[in-house]
Length: 528
View (cartoon, one colour):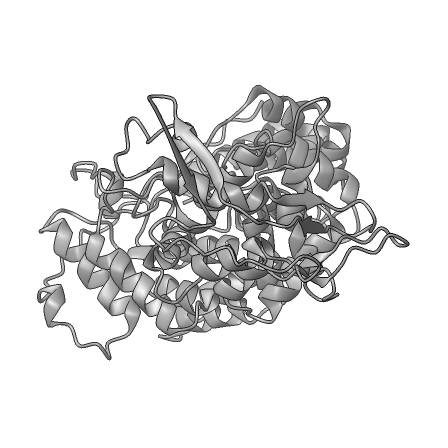
């Protein structure tokens, strides 16, 4: 077993003095206004200096390309002396073919929470982000999918997967209702199904039932091979009562904070735009679609909760923690750490037509995003919600897979990717966000034959390059640049030199152990 010591970075404490946030001009870049609001709350607390180029490079590649940079990309960036090279790199990555794949992976995991996947759904997400489709349009397509539109019909997977039967269990309409509230409004209404929420006064039973009535009216289609759902006729409100109060109530479709939608009355035989087809067994298309009504209410331009929820999720993606945390508990007793900032992000995102790429660029340009993950040695550890230092973010299973194959320079395969997902992904229906090492992942790293084969010497891969180097210093530089996207410290150089000196005719095995040790390190599996 090799001992690989991680070097300590000594960073200078940088202090900033800002005018109050209210004095900032509206035409200032959003990135500047974000920093002003973050720094105003710090009130002179110590903050980390800006990350050095290597730390920034690795972070932005992981966030926007879904992988670490290659050794060649790392060396190219580190030798670039241009003052605006960080901005140029951000723009290059956002314009790359890898960005829509990365964002599709990110949103697939966030929206489906490892329930499974469908090739048309993945293709739909990737194409949507390639087109830079606005988030409100995406949300409407997912909540109210159109099976006749071949370009967007796979959006129904969000609903259809949740409408499947699991064993003998009934369709879990309450979970579907809960997930729409959580993922599009940042509100977990699960405990408001049978009564007003006992601990969150803002969450009422009416809020849950108003969405529940729409989803209870939805069915999974089995007459087509692509993901699809249909709606039954909704002619009356849902009746319900609290377990604590026998008084009966009723409600039609309604989104929390919005008006109840009136259920129209139709003459018999006039309820359908397209009636059911008994020959093809294609379900009918009602004139009144609760899904469409809910989708429009949720994504309305004046629904600030929708805008705050996605702005908060993008902040979490960039910074490692939400302004509202947990992400799905927006309510008055769990206020944002920076209320003015969340209002600003939601307002600006709405004005920019829910352009997620634009928002992510602005966040990446902030000093808050570009802070180092290391404070000066004598600084007191700040609260994570202050964002005074970069927070560590666990790599997703997809990022670990892409980064491992990039590091060793071996062509990725679907077989090994599936193994990475099995080893590192959370169980189904569990949100991913916290670093959670597991025995399953450790055993995979130590014993999986396919993974260890990745480290074998192949044409032009990392081990082949290392074998060709005679100098221990050159070996240390190549392996640390390739795997950790940084140069080795003096201690790490000494470690490599000592191991190679003792290797004798076992040089290849020792080199392979060295690469494995760095890939298995906590430094590799976290975005610092």
